[in-house]
Image (cartoon, rainbow, N blue to C red):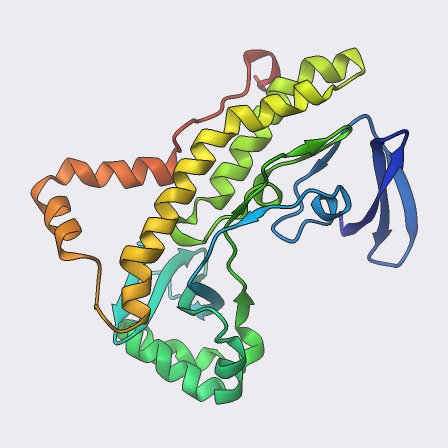
Length: 281
């Protein structure tokens, strides 16, 4: 824990482990039959392995911050869309986590405008939170996420495998990135347990992970790109306040249709399950 990878160890054309640095500045090496890069969208493992993702255009960035929660409010994920602003309230234990979405490249302008102007933006899009925005004491309380949507054509080299955001960075829309990352990890453990026990993991073994997880990744990213185009962009450009009317009409006319996005987000298109031999009693 609290240790970062600084580079990969390569021997005879394959990755044989990592070099690391601890929070205290101590450096060292860890050697392994397999190195799994699950270090996020700015993955050092991916970069050092020479794996380059294909980038998809994204119109938004996200700014994350917290507001106080009394505990009596409904535990509901609440979106706000009006007058060119888009935000989502996520109830957490003891606080609200807020995602404010705006046009990509706007971070410098927001910080130059200052904290009071940012509070005004939140009051407009989330009037129910207006009495709490003073909890944002400075722009240091607001964390900028440079939203990326990308996909590695190849997830591995000999001795190294990327999964999760290191293999396919996801948009925060729908909050599905963590689901896909965990499913990648379960599939990786299940499919590679045998080869690891035998002491040798081949490139063919590693390719099986990509083949297993590629379809759900492609489908979810396609949904996110559609959401960017049809829902998010029109709102932040001020062309619409709220989701498309046709979509709302379908959801209201066919209540069971609401279960579809809930299932895709909460469960996923290809759920992964640990095998019986790996489950705790």
